[in-house]
Length: 133
Length: 213
Image: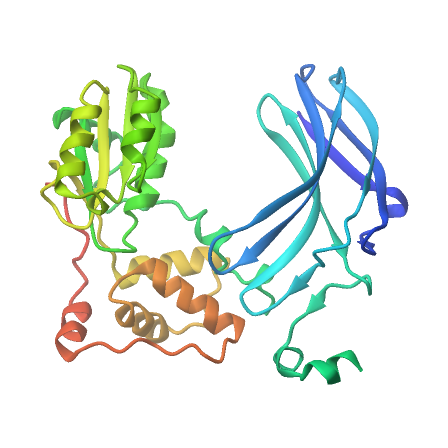
């Protein structure tokens, strides 16, 4: 049976923009895969069309059937993880192994506070000078 | 509720499979398609599942030894076909054929005459022989809602769902988007209004599932 694993260092799930995200990935497969790569990306979920932005990809040379590797990405300054009325923006790290398109995903939070920004009704209607205060 | 947790977000709606009416199945659909010479149309109003069924048929066509190609009726369609000529093992699936003008449709048919098959979606019959008429019912809408929220319908009375279904004229996609707003707490959401004639027509929809033509 196939299994894929992703773990960030110290099991961290929230990060600040510009920070480094590192950790380990692993897989146990019946056969040696042709390729394995880990991606850092964000996507939107909610009403309407989904949007995706792949920020970085790391490929692993000569992957074995049972393997473990380390990865490291530098997060960009934006976008932040947030939820509004229509969409949420979600950051994730994904391991993809071919053939078969096997994948595993780990969601993380990227924001200056370390928490997802929630755009409530009040936040949306607050005047800009008050919001900055 | 955050959009990412909303059970009616687009990612969840896209995972809903097409539900065949009673007495119909994939086997019947494929048989009927072959009887029609592999040239046929999925017909039905907006939000009745035509595109969902077309995409699922596209995924299954390789089981019959064909290579499927999914096309959207949009500007540049003919140039796309000329750039990647059709081969004899290709089975084409064209979504929203009615977006093509009559001339474009004739040019398209000529350009793809060598393909193994062609299935299109359209709102009205007449483009190609009808393979299946896609219809919706309040019961079908209720089943889909139940699937999306994990079987627990206690937050939605049948009357609420029926009202939503009728208000959206049986367009399940639009009704599910309406539920997204209701669940998400959007203040701006109001049910669309219908003329009394349309209301009567929508309320008489128990037998909307049509048989194949």
